[in-house]
Amino acid sequence: MQVIERDIVRNVEIIDLSLRAVVDNLRAPETGEASPKARQMILFDRAASARDLGVMLVLDGNGDSSLVITQNQYAAGVAARSDVITAQTQLQTTEALSIAVELSRATLTTNK
Image 1: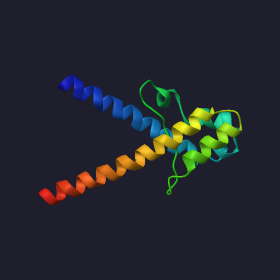
Image 2: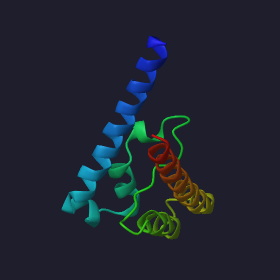
Image 3: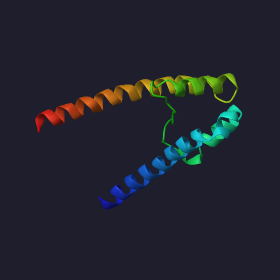
Image 4: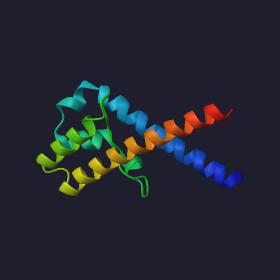
């Protein structure tokens, strides 16, 4: 159990560091001025593209930016059309999972 726990903790830490790097780099004024391909390299390091990690999306408060970013990358020739479809699917899946988590929390709170 300890080995599994350590592995999970390590994976979460790696993902957390990657997400923090994305946020930090988004705040840098140079990122917005970079070409779409350079912006992709700045925002998403190699840890963010690790096997089985899935798709990492950047969302605004409405959940819209990731799709805009992906579509812009598609238009610039950086991302494939399949990436746009993957982003749409991931966004819908994330929204559904978020609702499921909230329902589970409400159920657990009610059952206490």
